[in-house]
Figure (cartoon, rainbow, N blue to C red):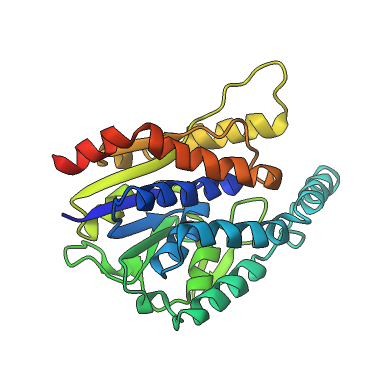
Length: 285
């Protein structure tokens, strides 16, 4: 029996996925197929390339601040220009080139260049904003795929994860050939269906609990709750196609809240530990 894991997007909270994978490994639950959207794709790609969950955690901590620094001012500046000139440009947004370079370097250390060089089945969704269409970066095109043009294999690992994690209003669209890609969460925040198409007999979907809003909530808390509601709503059909939904609570961690990396990793690990018997039972069915 083959187990697949589908990891949702969620900004900095994505490090919780490394905790989930570490707990599965510690309990001898083998993951055969993996997929992830946005930050989930960042974690999934490293795992598929052979990096251990704990080392992924260390890498995420190393690169997270480089990815986040400088986001806020360009966004505010862009909105200010819009209020004055009624025109919003993307010239001030992050390009994501640092993510692409870092991941290409990590792939190179494993002797990997394109996503097709990875042995473990991997799927990373993204959205072409010019065509309003979902594309999937993968090393294996499903034999029964109705639209094989939807799958892209001739792309570097760095470009693929950059495309899937190009969050609107923070990153510029990622250009590849005739495509302009943005965050895959716009259409498929938890790629359960694509993971199953890769031959998974059982699929565990990992998402994040939408935090409650109260009198102490700030604008980022509200934004994160909105993102979670939208992401889970978009992924309702995918979630129904999963065998188990593991929901991780991350205690109001913001989209770019790098100070909570350690706690998010622990939240992911404990989510598995607290649901271990249920997960094992699913594997037996």
